[in-house]
Image 1 (cartoon, rainbow, N blue to C red):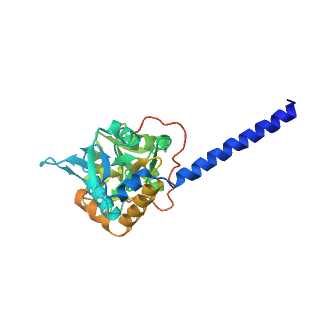
Image 2 (cartoon, rainbow, N blue to C red):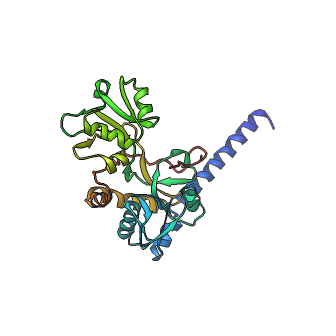
Image 3 (cartoon, one colour):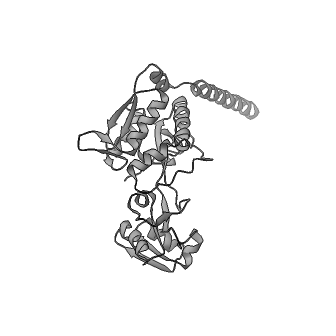
Length: 283
């Protein structure tokens, strides 16, 4: 075989392999065994680690309770599917979905694009990233004003790192995020840099959280890689929940202060095929 003939043969083989791959992708596009099972009346199996209140924990009656628990039930109601909860340690949540033991993970799970070879994600349903908390009246109104402000942070925390990276001049380092918030309430600081969950739980009256977050950390629902119909249905349910008042009602039950809604507008859901998977996030 001449070199020219070999190149032609190789090109034809490559095209044939590409055609097979595209055909397989087209065939698999509409397949969703999980969705088909739900259509038969079987429950949506929700894996969660019940050790992270107020998102999920076990109450005094030995029952699962929390924001994620109620959110899962609301999604199930909108999908017309019963919900079954599977308590699983956080490190085992992804494996439960990959092994087919659970249909989804709803457990304050931060979006991690390194895992998209193994699973897919919903649109964000909660924002847990780094935020600016300031006074409702007379406080800073934008991140740009932090350069001239007294900024309270948790010593060694994400806010501390961000403040140092930005070269802020007046950084007040506290033992805990709660103390950073208290410094703002007392007038010792002009702003605090804390995670959005802490802000929603611990900010005192008279404080407010600026949007958007300085460093986003959206929480998402984890689904099987080959579950396009379920993913679309959950995204549609979440979009409605976030806009029709249901999300606000759920949040009001568990957070003294209104949490930041996630920036779902324009959100690009990572492809379910990406770079090799990596260990997931840890609380």
